[in-house]
Image 1 (cartoon, rainbow, N blue to C red):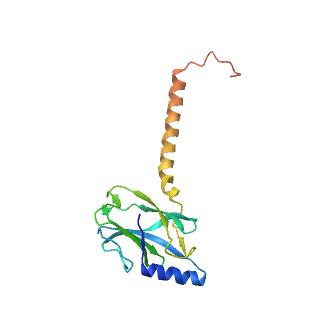
Image 2 (cartoon, one colour; image 1 turned 45 degrees about the horizontal axis):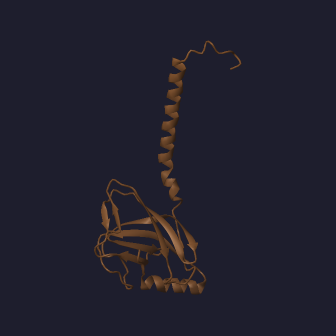
Image 3 (cartoon, one colour; image 1 turned 30 degrees about the vertical axis):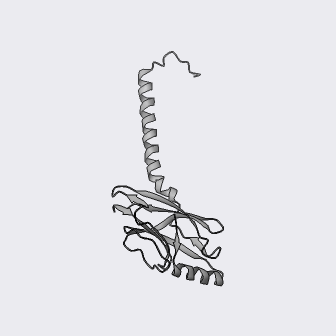
Length: 173
């Protein structure tokens, strides 16, 4: 990913660093226009969907890892991705004129992971604000699978008990 930090994003990061605070990336958006991004951008050219950051961490120095869950019924072939600060400022953008960056079918739930290396901003000026642990997204699926496995084991044991003759076993068994 070839990320372009916007001028507004850079200005905010430098001001935050001077105050000893850090800004939070809170949302990621996908759009359908492909182009060569520039620093003076303030919005994606054709934003279709914006979601909160679902998980993330400051990895080291100016490397930030984040994940986003795109679970709406929107189908999109994305040629542009934008990362937004808590105040709605477009912090950084990536786009390509012809290469698809993300594809999401309308019935699919897509988890995207991004590793951003933010060498263009002061160290420590950017953090990630998350909506929670992305692993929680899978909790319901795992619970359904576990219940199905337990029910299957219960049926298997009952069938086994019906087919076995245990009259030869002693009480000590």
